[in-house]
Length: 217
Image 1 (spheres, helix red, strand yellow):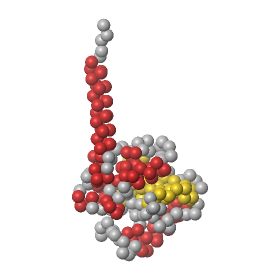
Image 2 (spheres, one colour):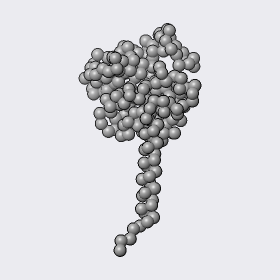
Image 3 (cartoon, one colour):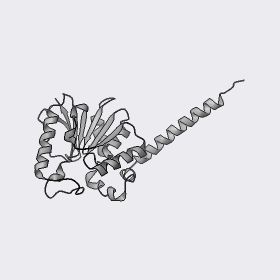
Image 4 (tube, helix red, strand yellow):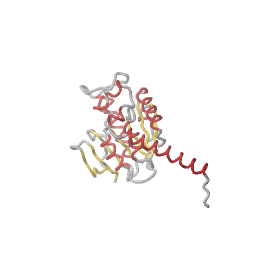
């Protein structure tokens, strides 16, 4: 007669079911852009069309930015965190960090992270010039400087805008990227490429030339 340890089996079964339920729930959140956007208030969702990275773009970007386990990816101007959250979901063995200078948006990103229960992603409120980029391996950049130009769509009026800031941020990022080690990967989306030093080789371009993939040589 074979005896089973019922309590042990029950505990293991419950753990498995809870894990599966969490996985299914997470899959549901990332099933469509609209479903993921529902994490945020309606007033914030209005920014999605022009200021948030679509899931299909995020998937392509992280495939390139995470060549192996343990990669550390930085998103400059992370907004409500959609790219970093998507990256953390698509690449659970990499880590993602987003920096955003609007405190309210950084707060929404953190709340979304808590709801999703993702532990390989973090956010901070601040200016990217306060960071040491060498603490990260690879970088995603959805042209967060562009709204400094005259006549462009602004997210809100909580920060200063000026063409001088656009030029300053571009020059600063250019210098920081130039100091990164060989093999550093950068993905830009809707960027004018002014921030990219010539030591980076463009190895791929997608989505009507709006998504560009670079490696430092």
